[in-house]
Image (cartoon, rainbow, N blue to C red; front, side):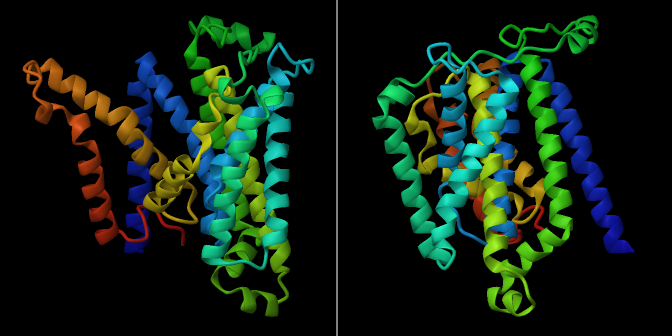
Length: 343
């Protein structure tokens, strides 16, 4: 009873902190835009956690699947192309395209494990990145595609939001993207958590722990792995589509390289494998440290008048990598399984 009470208070404290964090940042448009990006990358991190944490496949190409979602949305929605798809159709197509790419990659690799699987997925990420750069007639090459038109609110929803002082134009009011991506994150987190508690989630964990024992128990190992790859890749494509609508373009293909895959992998390791809340917490800690905390501390130091003499030692951004490294070492020492590891 004492252990259960401790876990309950931990969850309540985290939810309260997240609520306060969201409410405070909501009133700052610039910071709110950064938090919106964290919501999007949290969806991709949850997808990666399904593949790595739940199913035990060391995947290093999640950024390529994210980029596939971004460019699928760009190809289907930019006015220069003849497709003219709307928000929901582009979102569905991007999700399905990334899921198909993940399954087609994983099907020939089911016999590979560990480092060998990781190396092939790493190579897949590079192939996708260079393909996006070289297919200039389709992807725009290094110039990227744009503009991606923003979503349009339905009439039945625009009226109530107008009474709250929120406009209906996504291009003019960033709060719409904020709430849209937050709702998407909550829906994805709830869906993955329910799947993780189902028979499919138990099959994933059985395959992760011991493939031979799982096969002896009658579990179809290949089907379990492919289902995890399909779901994780689909979530990465969904996040990529939301990101394309958020930045109104596709950005350069180099934005979806191995570095982004490594950052998302670091996020789920910090937060805890096989845990939805761990993936979200790790994303906010790893990406939020550089995108939110470091600029805030720099502005705070400047407001105190300590950085007026151009002293580089008083600029936190110059120390952020050192501080972050020390925090990671401390975390791996005292919480090697992450902050919120799966049971």
